[in-house]
Length: 126
Image (cartoon, rainbow, N blue to C red; front, top):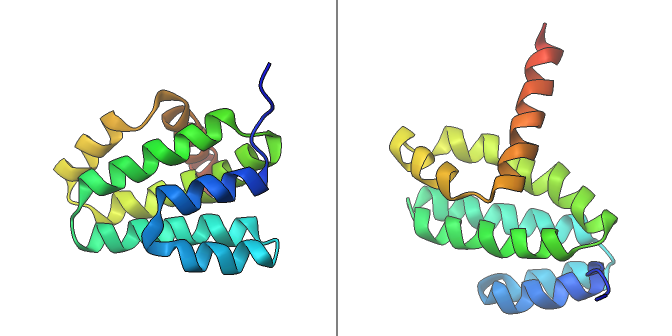
């Protein structure tokens, strides 16, 4: 059985998957700040949102899903609590038809986590 991806291996993949933010990824990884690395990915998607580049966001989500699917428990925890949580902001920033397209493209595991988070957030409001 293959070993699960840890934060060091994840950073190496992210540097390849996201060359436009490689410098930021390297700087944060040198500080052992994996949550900061994930925040860079989120900020990168927000820039794509402002440009209405839904296809690029879709690719970013699929790449992050690959890391999530192959990641250890720490990787999965950080991605669930930072990256997937950012979907609420994405949804607000995109036009409804863009969000519908993107949502149907989001991997099922990510959609399930997002739905659970949204439900818990709703429950907390009441």
